[in-house]
Amino acid sequence: MNGDLYQLCVASDLIPVADDGPVAFHGVNKTGSLAMANVMRQSYFAAERADQFFSVYHGVPRKLDDMCDILRHSRGHNFFVSHNLFGAVDLPASGVLVTQVRHPLSRTLSIFGWMKRNHLNRHGNLDAVPPLERWIVALKGFKHSQMHQIALGFGTTPLARDVPVQDLFDMATANLEWAFDWFGIAELFEESIFAMAHICGLPAVLAWEKDTRNQWRDPAAELDESTGDLIRESLELEFAFYEHALQLFRSRLEDVDFGDTLAAYKERCCGEYGERLFDEQS
Image 1 (tube, rainbow, N blue to C red):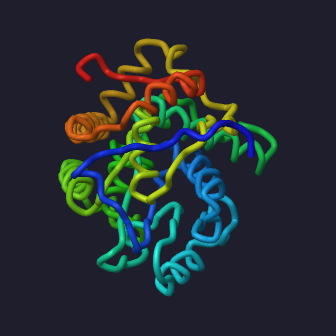
Image 2: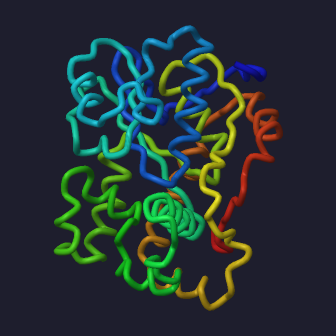
C-alpha cells in the first residue's frame, strides 16, 4: 500500500455514524462506485480492519446473493459494497444505507463506452452497436439511469416499463432523501470520501485513484453541441434528479466541518478527475 494517510477530523450532526452496525453501499454503476470502494478498502486495510470489508468488486464475495447472506448474518460493524444492494436485503436498525450519484452527461457517455467495450469483447467487432444518438433515444428517458435504480432498487427492473418517467423521478428524489441514510456526489468526491470514512469510523483515508478501465468512453468536451442537447433533452428528468441530489448534498455540507485535512487531500487528488462536470446553474 503506497501513499500518505490523511487523518480525519470530521464534525457533523448530519452524517450518520455506523458505530456497531453494518454499512451497505448501493453502488450504482458508472457513478465512481469502484473508485470509492478502492479507497475505502485501502483505508480499512490501513486501519487493520480488513476483516470488516466485503466487496463484490474485489471478489469478497463474488456474487450478490453471497454478499446478502453474509450481511444478514453479520454481527457488529462491517462494510458491504455491491451493485443492487438497495432492495436486495433488509438492514438491521443499526445499519446505514449509502449510495453515490454522478453527473448524467459523463455517466451516460461512460455507459455507452462500457457497452461498446463489452460488445467488442464478446463479438470481436462493433457492427451491431447503434450510433450514440440512436442509443440515447432508445433509452426513453429512464433506461440505465441512476434515477431508475434509486427509485426502484433491486429486483424490479421489469416494472420500469410500466412506471411513468415522472413517477420514477418522484420516487427517486424521495428515496434519496428518506430511504438512504447518506449519499455522495462523484463531482465532489473528496467530501464524499471523507463523509463515507466518517460513517465507517475510519481514522484516516488514502488518496483516491480514478478508474481507468473504460477506454471507450468519449470525453464530454468532444461532443458536438447537437448530441449534447439530445442527451439533455432525452434524459431531462435524469438531469433534474442529479441537480436535486447535488443541491441537497451541498446543503448538508453547510453543517459539516471537515477539519484542516480536506484542503490538502483535495490538492493531492485534483489530478484524478478525467472530467468534473457542473452545469452552469449548479
